[in-house]
Each structure stands twice: as C-alpha cells, then as structure tokens.
Image (tube, rainbow, N blue to C red):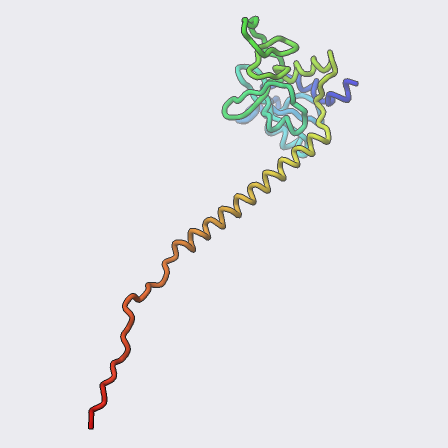
Length: 206
C-alpha cells in the first residue's frame, strides 16, 4: 500500500546529506554536492558530476535556508504531489523543507500545527515538510505523494487557459494600437474657402 503512495526515491532523498565538497571536483568553483538524481537514487553530487554522469536524468537541486535543506516548489511539484505541505517564500522563490525542523514548544493561540511534529504553521496545511508528510502517510495512509492523471489534466487545462488569455490579450492590444493609429492619423485639411468660379465679362451691348 505504501509503495503506491510514495515514490521509491523519496526516502533516500530525505536521508541524503547535502552540501559536502565533491571528491572529484573539489577544486572547482561549484563543487558543493547539492544535486540529487531521481533515477539513480544515490548520493548527492555537484554541478560538474551532473553534466558527466546524469545528463539525461531527472535531477533536482537542493538549496539551504537557515542550515536546513529546501527545494523549490517549481521543481518538486513536477514529480511529487506536495499537497498538504507548508510552503515558504525565501529569496523571492517559493520553497518547502525536506525534513522536520526542531523548534520550542508552540505557545497558546497557535491555530495551525503540523500533524506529525506539532510545529506551528503559517497557513492551514497538514505538514511542515516532506518528511512529516511521509510519516503521516505511514501512520494513516490518507495522503499521497503520487501525481495522478487528474493533476496532469488540471495542469494542462491551466496551461491552455493561460495561453488563450495571453492570446486574447495580445490581439486586444494590437487592435487597440491600430485604433490609436487610425484615430490619430490627421485628416486632409478641408478648404473652407471655396474657390470662386472664373468671372465672365458681360457682353458689350451693340
């Protein structure tokens, strides 16, 4: 049952140690091991190892916030159902934490708590991290990390709707610009003074 709710690479990811110096590329500028391959489910590796060993694999980049590992929502939501997990905005990017973070006992008046570790949450989510959601699945089985066809259909529908709205906006802008051009084109000056006809001399009387 659990294998149907959790991808096989998730637990190895959550137990992996990141940000050590790569043994192969230790002298290079980007030698910290902050990459993880979902196809291999092995150890963390650096930027240069990705180019040489994991070129065509599914790879995510782990980042760090206050000495805790985080992953960007834009990356992880493509391969994992992250519903129910609290997200945060750090350095203008929305992220979520990989594992539980220790904190003092929550005070009174806290309305949202993680169901597993009781950490206070900013919003009405169930879990503070991917690790706590994993524990919750093992305990109750009422959540899942697996993306189903409905998620994909919804994402495609959203993409199509956004594309249509952008196309309508672009066409509307073009029409508005054309209207402005037509309305500002000067019309030929009207000749208020009509040219008088050529006078004809009256014939002389005989």
